[in-house]
Length: 124
Image 1: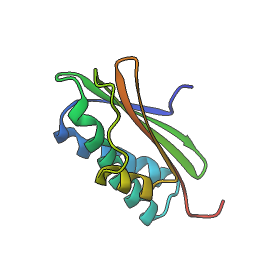
Image 2: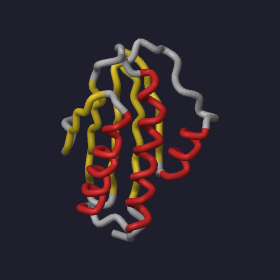
Image 3: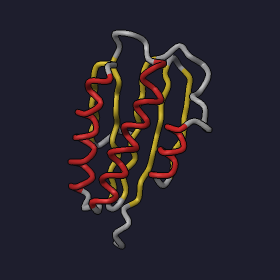
């Protein structure tokens, strides 16, 4: 499935703010509440904190946004040779899973990814 928006950034924590700003703009476009938008912004930051340490140096982080009315799914992927997934009992995962409706980790085909879905708290 083709994402509605795809953003490619260097694997560098300095660019996480660009990704968070893009997330805020897209969530606002979907009429998410201020609280939902802030939760998504923080969740994206935590997802990046989980995948960036495993990313291959000099590669790109790819973030795909799949948008529906009242829902957004964000997948953050980095090239990685690491086969172990980040720990699900770590702080970043706990924050990520508490802030989103659904979250999952995946590793394979030379990539590590975090995918999260959030439903707006505004009734449709």
